View (cartoon, rainbow, N blue to C red):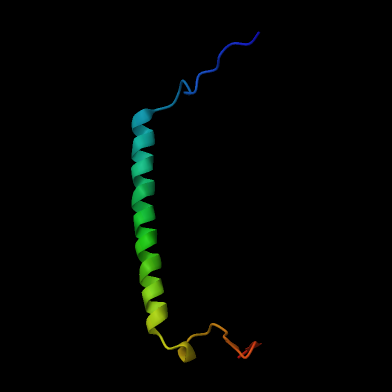
Amino acid sequence: MTYKKTLRHPKADESARQAFQQKIQQYEKKVNLLFLLMKVVFHTIPHELTAIPQKVNGVLA
């Protein structure tokens, strides 16, 4: 026989966990916005001015 384990740790602090989750959500919003801005900028710059290699007829140019 074994005893039933609880899912909560006895030293867990619910308020600290909520504060941590709020910080994570704020960071995720900032990262998503930054990614969106980078994507917009990347699509507005002519490809000739970027340092990203492109394939022309299957060969890197």
